Image 1 (cartoon, rainbow, N blue to C red):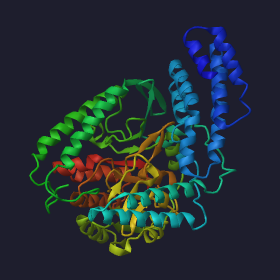
Image 2: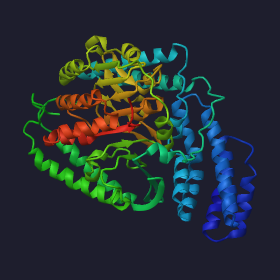
Image 3: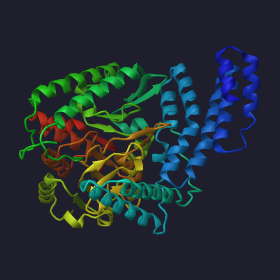
Image 4: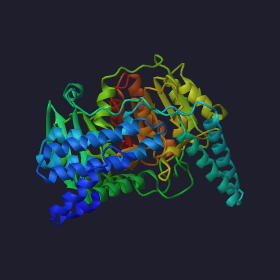
Length: 537
């Protein structure tokens, strides 16, 4: 009935629209959450057709509150992310109305009303019994068997079937986590405290409405609304930039290793690759075009630190490559409300404790860990057979700084199975959810560690996003595969800045400046982003 009512409105058939929407609105107080949310959407449309914009917005807020309460009671991340889809039409209509009214603060509030809501809830509590841990152990054993069978040329249906069953068991067990009944829903974003928390920073929040990007900027206590560019054009330019960076970081020659398996010599530079300076010229040109599209219309003050809240398709954008951001500290956050809440909270961690982990099959990881251990005397170092999932989990709990050098794998089909490779197998997001006290700052030079899948409702799911949702204040990670040996000098530059007292985003900016004379390392630095809150420690 709601769909028919929307079609009737579009065709100008008012009586039919009113009849169908009114009948749909009768279900506001009964039935499953999706039905109630749709009924509130019908109520908003009916009120809007009658000229009652204020009443329409009130109906949208009530519908979103229904979905909020439902989502807050779910005990699994995957279920919370999926529940966001019930509120998508409500939030989209509210955002369209705010844009039509040209009120920047209202656009920001509606954008935040349904952005990364699952990450803003308290982290889920994994099942207290041993079933999930056992299922995860079986998953690692199944992956090891499949790897051995593949190397032996016998990767038939048996090993693959075992792995599929193990993955299904992990997902099923995680979904049976304890109910989170009583968890308060996500609070509506007010924004009154935002200017004070930002200080001299500027907030740039991007929204995607009907195929066009808009931006709300907040700086100096004032909010401004900007039309940016068509989404399709921006997405094309972003893909050109990512392709150009991949050509620099992963030339298709030789047989070296990267953090997902590139051909590099012992010096950390590509073998038989085209001249890096020439490839970087393509990167710079692609970055300039993206910069002109996204940031050119915004009028940011020169050198001003920036907090960016992306939307699809910008979560994979290497923001540090953009020329107007190169000399700034840039923090990327899934939500302004999440950033504001974390910015006002004090970090708690064991004073100065640093955990350094090296995964297997990375020749450069040993040198990297050794160099970092010299920078952090007394730090906890786990490598070789000691770097198991359970030992790493125990060491990470309560750390001030964590560094994990390992193969990274992003699973777009099942993002919570995205993983880091440790001595006994995959360290998944399901494992990370078992962390008792997450580290304050997490340096994660693993392939694609900052990549996320954007689900309906601007829900962001990926390794770095999951860490931020668990309470890690800042994650420094790449949006692309990174060469193994080259990651070591850049990681040392990051930790040198952290040791000097720089906050996470400042440390990333300082590391980029330290390697700027080397075009290949400059490309590596451009691939990294700081996700979370920039005043980590």
